[in-house]
Length: 499
Picture 1 (cartoon, one colour):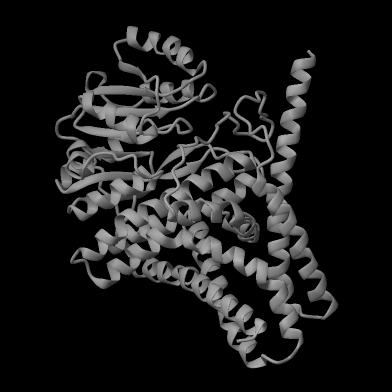
Picture 2 (picture 1 turned 90 degrees about the vertical axis):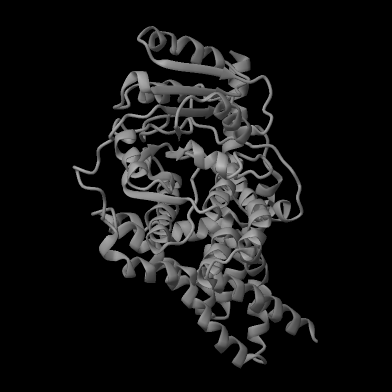
């Protein structure tokens, strides 16, 4: 085998794997239209009643959330529910002044008769999963609602979710759709919103309607306590304890209900390094969970279609290393193509464009389904695609660590209560202080891919230009914003010290 054949072989395998995962969008769009008539199906007003108000525990896991925790506590006290049937657990692992902020802020509510418990741990054993598990041991609620610190639960959250449990005793979880408080803050948040809408508007809703497994999203959902315990309780051996518990519960026979028509607003990360940290945790945790859970899925009596859908659901992050490989090999493959010895091979590879069409249709329908002004939103799809390419180094590292079992702590995503365009981050405590090594690699890859663009233009390889350019811009955008943020942070620190 020649070097050229080896390069083309690796490139072909990479694109085939990306085609497999990318074409999943066709499957989701197919089931979207197949279940279209039931997409707005919901309980009637008469059915949205609670026969006997059960005790509900609202768990608020947090770690160093000085900017947003007051907002969350206030929202939970406004929940439309009998005060004597509501318990609020603040599961606080903070190491900064968040502890004092919480302690002082809840006093007025305690005096008003709210059952609010501030549970501060001096260690982070088990991280979020550990905090939830410890809180569950003393929770008095029959149902457990969970909200991360960046969420603002709607007043009607419990009234809209609890009735489903009384309609079907097999329902173990009701998950609501995430809405984005600061969607229009910047290009970063607008792009994230498109990406997340694909999951929350299409994937979660369609999977649930079609009868496939879905996952608790870690927040903005409510569990039947019995379901959590029956499934084995929270476990801290992965970074995505929510995905892990979800599969264990559904394999035990519990059913989940996903509400696409009721939303829980939340704040998106506004700085690139926080976003990269979040993506790293989600990606690594999903791989850890796939390693743990998918062998169990294979041993079940589930239909082959269910197993295949679960495979894609659990293992989709495997795409990132192959995105990176494709980015690295684009230039060598272009040079090989110029030799003219593999014309038939390159004609065959044109089929891979369908993966792009599949992804576009998937995200297009996620915007059209819920937004009247979807045209203004879907224009950020190319930015999302380029950003995914730019994130491939960061997320490939996460995949490798997950596959090889390298353990790491649960790194929180900082929130700053930044919702409108005029809002700014005034504090530097939660910002990354050093340029990540991956950002330097991203800068190198950006330059390398721009060289590929130059070759494509010089030799009039028009078909190669769009994807080469997206790789170059994706890596360039991610690295530039990461480095720029650290420089601005260090400048702000210097000014504070000088003052």
